[in-house]
Length: 607
Image (cartoon, rainbow, N blue to C red):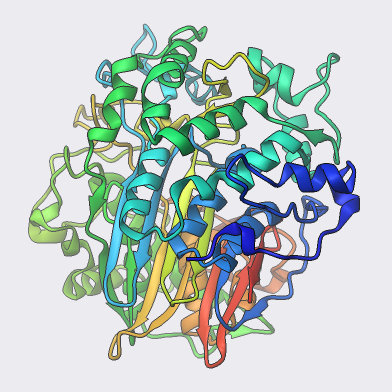
């Protein structure tokens, strides 16, 4: 087994912001493992063309260059795809704190060349949670922003337990070695990227947190500028303890106590108790992936509490039942006729999602089987509801031929998240979507009881539950808050195979809240139906409908003729930013081709 000592890479001194010797000293842990600090990301926050990347032996795609490089160095040292994913996540906690981290949760799919496995590290509602905890005295739901920015929104974090469980099954390098890149960067610092600066600068709620305000902002309350060397000694200390002791260093002792204390002491306190944090590692987080056929492919994804795979496959499955337009793609853009079908299929699929999907430990699947929502006869029945004119809004169907007693959950915003796609030198694959939900989560930062500067942000995942426990008719909402329950998610980590041969074809996923579903479906169509490469499929414009009379098209892409045609078909069209963060890797004849979303600062690194 090779260790990180065997790494030897070109090192660019100017990005270290300190001397060569201190760069090298900063890369060596107490165990003598070396880590080479790579060039820091200098990408603006807007749209940046990405070339797509080829690799012969292995590849890692992640949302930040420092995180992708950490995974690359782990793969170079002989680590597995799971090893690399762990290193990537630990660095993302540091450099992309707005999207994911050890204060949140994740879904991880693995493929070992023979079997696909799924690990559910979704956050959990505390034992003291109640279905009315987001209701005000008048019985109405709290304003959504107030619910997010509160202790009430914080679920018990699951990411650390997920990483350790996956490592026990699929790790190759020692657990402690996987922490070296993140600890090194936390101690020596990383340059704040334009994207992180922009998000910090625009977030007033984060400024009000006692730890975050001192860490991310100066004495005048201004966000630290682009290029500022940000060190995180609190996170480095926490990581050292977890690397040496294991998950108990996170779920017990000072860290667990600090998490609970921060949640309970917020001006809008939540019910999190130390015992809630202590108990998470007792959960069995291994679950069965859902694998369903579409065209000549088998698409594998996550079952509930994720709504991602089911809803993606409903959209694709409904469209498969329709007569494809004569022209689906014209001048590199989807046509109005194809968009009409996609948006209508989205309405039908989201209607079912909002009624039926919730934590399977609390919610029964329609007809006793989630696959009833993907039954070809049912999808054909749904497809017949699509005409040449927009249906405005769709009603849920009756998959499994049983009418559920649940009420439909009204639309609520969903945000955040990051995606990681990795294939290692042995052909093992990981598709992992990870989140703290909203940008910077609950805006509550924990220093793990270290008393040092920095730390990690806590999620606001409980606002993925319905804020109201019942619908307008008083029917219980499937995705309502209950103690010990996991909130419904839209995360859609996907691994795709050839249906006949079982060969690996591609892996992908995206951040973006509920729009993750549309982004993932769009990319799958681009890759597999339109024969685009991974980068071209990611570059396609985004478009969403959450079962509303209004559909949103990504601004700056579509010609007026397309919008006018959709309008003539009864659609109400709005345009705006739809900032996906898709990371995809596809198998090629010579190895792999990876793509990263030009809307964010991610890259693919491989060899």
